[in-house]
Length: 215
Image (tube, rainbow, N blue to C red; front, side):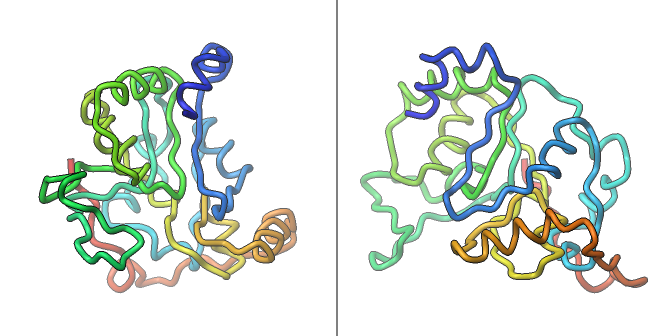
Protein backbone atom coordinates (compact mmCIF):
# COMPACT_ATOMS: atom_id res chain seq x y z
CA UNK A 1 0.00 0.00 0.00
CA UNK A 2 2.92 2.35 0.62
CA UNK A 3 4.25 1.71 -2.88
CA UNK A 4 0.78 2.25 -4.33
CA UNK A 5 0.31 5.50 -2.40
CA UNK A 6 3.63 6.88 -3.64
CA UNK A 7 2.71 6.13 -7.25
CA UNK A 8 -0.89 7.40 -7.02
CA UNK A 9 0.25 10.68 -5.47
CA UNK A 10 3.08 11.24 -7.94
CA UNK A 11 5.79 11.16 -5.26
CA UNK A 12 7.99 8.99 -7.46
CA UNK A 13 8.18 11.92 -9.90
CA UNK A 14 9.11 14.47 -7.23
CA UNK A 15 11.71 12.69 -5.06
CA UNK A 16 14.89 10.76 -5.77
CA UNK A 17 14.70 8.13 -3.02
CA UNK A 18 12.22 6.35 -0.77
CA UNK A 19 13.09 4.87 2.60
CA UNK A 20 11.00 2.46 4.65
CA UNK A 21 11.69 1.85 8.34
CA UNK A 22 9.95 0.32 11.34
CA UNK A 23 8.44 2.52 14.04
CA UNK A 24 11.07 1.30 16.50
CA UNK A 25 13.93 2.28 14.18
CA UNK A 26 16.01 5.37 14.86
CA UNK A 27 17.21 7.07 11.69
CA UNK A 28 20.33 9.21 11.90
CA UNK A 29 19.18 11.79 9.35
CA UNK A 30 22.53 13.63 9.04
CA UNK A 31 24.32 10.34 8.30
CA UNK A 32 21.58 9.32 5.87
CA UNK A 33 21.86 12.61 3.99
CA UNK A 34 25.65 12.37 4.01
CA UNK A 35 25.39 8.90 2.49
CA UNK A 36 22.87 10.04 -0.15
CA UNK A 37 25.23 12.84 -1.15
CA UNK A 38 28.07 10.38 -1.75
CA UNK A 39 29.93 10.72 1.53
CA UNK A 40 31.16 8.15 4.05
CA UNK A 41 30.23 7.63 7.68
CA UNK A 42 32.99 7.80 10.33
CA UNK A 43 34.11 4.49 11.83
CA UNK A 44 33.84 4.35 15.62
CA UNK A 45 34.80 1.64 18.09
CA UNK A 46 31.11 1.09 18.91
CA UNK A 47 30.15 0.56 15.25
CA UNK A 48 33.03 -1.70 14.26
CA UNK A 49 31.03 -4.87 14.99
CA UNK A 50 28.71 -4.10 12.07
CA UNK A 51 31.45 -4.42 9.44
CA UNK A 52 32.97 -7.40 7.65
CA UNK A 53 36.29 -7.72 5.80
CA UNK A 54 34.74 -6.58 2.53
CA UNK A 55 32.74 -3.61 3.78
CA UNK A 56 35.63 -2.31 5.89
CA UNK A 57 37.82 -2.15 2.77
CA UNK A 58 35.17 -0.13 0.96
CA UNK A 59 34.76 2.34 3.80
CA UNK A 60 37.12 5.00 2.50
CA UNK A 61 37.11 4.21 -1.21
CA UNK A 62 34.92 5.45 -4.03
CA UNK A 63 33.42 1.96 -4.28
CA UNK A 64 31.95 2.41 -0.80
CA UNK A 65 30.14 5.62 -1.70
CA UNK A 66 26.67 5.95 -3.14
CA UNK A 67 26.91 6.89 -6.80
CA UNK A 68 23.74 5.21 -8.08
CA UNK A 69 20.51 7.07 -8.80
CA UNK A 70 18.56 4.28 -10.50
CA UNK A 71 17.94 0.56 -9.88
CA UNK A 72 19.21 0.92 -6.31
CA UNK A 73 17.92 -1.04 -3.30
CA UNK A 74 20.07 -1.07 -0.15
CA UNK A 75 19.88 -2.23 3.47
CA UNK A 76 21.15 -5.05 5.66
CA UNK A 77 21.16 -8.09 3.39
CA UNK A 78 20.20 -11.59 4.52
CA UNK A 79 21.01 -14.68 2.47
CA UNK A 80 19.80 -18.29 2.50
CA UNK A 81 17.45 -17.73 5.46
CA UNK A 82 15.17 -20.67 6.17
CA UNK A 83 11.50 -20.15 7.06
CA UNK A 84 10.78 -20.54 10.78
CA UNK A 85 8.82 -23.71 11.51
CA UNK A 86 8.16 -23.05 15.21
CA UNK A 87 4.46 -22.10 15.46
CA UNK A 88 5.08 -20.08 18.63
CA UNK A 89 7.57 -17.79 16.88
CA UNK A 90 6.70 -14.28 15.73
CA UNK A 91 8.27 -15.17 12.38
CA UNK A 92 6.54 -18.54 11.91
CA UNK A 93 5.92 -19.23 8.23
CA UNK A 94 3.39 -21.97 7.34
CA UNK A 95 4.42 -24.11 4.39
CA UNK A 96 1.15 -23.47 2.56
CA UNK A 97 2.03 -19.76 2.47
CA UNK A 98 5.68 -20.23 1.50
CA UNK A 99 6.58 -23.77 0.40
CA UNK A 100 10.25 -23.10 -0.39
CA UNK A 101 13.08 -24.24 1.89
CA UNK A 102 14.88 -20.88 1.74
CA UNK A 103 13.79 -17.28 1.30
CA UNK A 104 15.28 -15.30 -1.57
CA UNK A 105 17.96 -12.79 -0.65
CA UNK A 106 16.24 -9.90 1.14
CA UNK A 107 16.89 -6.74 3.15
CA UNK A 108 16.02 -6.30 6.81
CA UNK A 109 12.68 -4.57 7.32
CA UNK A 110 14.26 -2.48 10.09
CA UNK A 111 15.03 -0.01 7.31
CA UNK A 112 15.89 -0.07 3.63
CA UNK A 113 16.37 2.56 0.95
CA UNK A 114 15.52 2.54 -2.75
CA UNK A 115 15.81 4.88 -5.70
CA UNK A 116 12.38 6.07 -6.80
CA UNK A 117 12.41 4.18 -10.09
CA UNK A 118 12.39 0.97 -8.04
CA UNK A 119 9.03 1.81 -6.43
CA UNK A 120 6.81 1.17 -9.49
CA UNK A 121 8.83 -1.92 -10.36
CA UNK A 122 8.26 -3.42 -6.93
CA UNK A 123 4.60 -2.45 -7.00
CA UNK A 124 4.01 -4.10 -10.36
CA UNK A 125 5.88 -7.19 -9.18
CA UNK A 126 3.67 -7.31 -6.06
CA UNK A 127 0.54 -7.47 -8.23
CA UNK A 128 1.80 -10.79 -9.59
CA UNK A 129 3.43 -12.26 -6.48
CA UNK A 130 1.58 -14.31 -3.88
CA UNK A 131 1.47 -12.43 -0.59
CA UNK A 132 3.22 -13.49 2.60
CA UNK A 133 2.96 -11.50 5.82
CA UNK A 134 6.70 -10.86 6.31
CA UNK A 135 6.99 -7.50 4.57
CA UNK A 136 10.77 -7.43 4.18
CA UNK A 137 10.96 -10.94 2.74
CA UNK A 138 8.02 -10.21 0.46
CA UNK A 139 8.98 -6.75 -0.86
CA UNK A 140 12.79 -6.84 -0.94
CA UNK A 141 13.02 -10.59 -1.44
CA UNK A 142 10.21 -12.09 -3.51
CA UNK A 143 9.09 -8.96 -5.38
CA UNK A 144 12.63 -7.71 -5.93
CA UNK A 145 13.59 -11.11 -7.29
CA UNK A 146 10.65 -11.06 -9.70
CA UNK A 147 11.63 -7.57 -10.82
CA UNK A 148 15.30 -8.67 -11.23
CA UNK A 149 16.53 -6.04 -8.79
CA UNK A 150 19.90 -6.40 -7.06
CA UNK A 151 19.90 -5.97 -3.29
CA UNK A 152 22.94 -4.11 -1.94
CA UNK A 153 24.33 -4.73 1.55
CA UNK A 154 25.34 -1.82 3.76
CA UNK A 155 26.56 -2.54 7.31
CA UNK A 156 25.24 0.70 8.80
CA UNK A 157 21.62 -0.14 8.05
CA UNK A 158 21.62 -2.02 11.34
CA UNK A 159 18.82 -4.38 12.35
CA UNK A 160 20.34 -4.65 15.85
CA UNK A 161 19.45 -2.62 18.92
CA UNK A 162 21.96 -0.72 21.03
CA UNK A 163 22.10 1.76 23.89
CA UNK A 164 25.62 2.97 23.12
CA UNK A 165 25.55 6.64 22.21
CA UNK A 166 28.32 6.31 19.64
CA UNK A 167 26.36 3.58 17.85
CA UNK A 168 23.61 6.10 17.20
CA UNK A 169 26.19 8.61 15.97
CA UNK A 170 27.95 6.11 13.70
CA UNK A 171 25.11 4.22 11.99
CA UNK A 172 22.44 5.17 9.48
CA UNK A 173 19.71 3.28 11.34
CA UNK A 174 19.45 1.46 14.67
CA UNK A 175 16.60 -0.97 15.30
CA UNK A 176 14.62 -2.06 18.36
CA UNK A 177 14.72 1.34 20.05
CA UNK A 178 12.13 2.01 22.74
CA UNK A 179 10.39 5.39 23.02
CA UNK A 180 12.60 6.80 25.79
CA UNK A 181 15.72 5.65 23.98
CA UNK A 182 14.60 7.50 20.84
CA UNK A 183 15.11 10.76 22.74
CA UNK A 184 18.46 9.51 24.00
CA UNK A 185 19.52 8.60 20.46
CA UNK A 186 18.42 11.96 19.07
CA UNK A 187 20.24 13.88 21.79
CA UNK A 188 23.38 11.81 21.20
CA UNK A 189 23.39 12.71 17.51
CA UNK A 190 22.46 16.35 18.08
CA UNK A 191 25.21 16.86 20.68
CA UNK A 192 28.25 17.63 18.53
CA UNK A 193 30.49 17.82 21.59
CA UNK A 194 30.02 14.09 22.21
CA UNK A 195 33.27 12.48 20.98
CA UNK A 196 33.46 8.84 19.91
CA UNK A 197 36.57 6.66 20.07
CA UNK A 198 38.10 5.09 16.94
CA UNK A 199 38.68 1.31 16.82
CA UNK A 200 41.82 -0.18 18.31
CA UNK A 201 44.97 -1.08 16.40
CA UNK A 202 44.25 -4.78 15.88
CA UNK A 203 40.50 -4.62 15.19
CA UNK A 204 40.64 -6.51 11.88
CA UNK A 205 41.71 -9.69 13.62
CA UNK A 206 39.12 -9.88 16.36
CA UNK A 207 35.84 -8.13 15.70
CA UNK A 208 34.88 -8.05 12.03
CA UNK A 209 31.87 -10.07 10.92
CA UNK A 210 31.89 -12.88 8.38
CA UNK A 211 31.76 -11.48 4.84
CA UNK A 212 28.26 -10.79 3.58
CA UNK A 213 29.10 -11.85 0.03
CA UNK A 214 25.91 -13.59 -1.07
CA UNK A 215 24.49 -12.69 -4.45
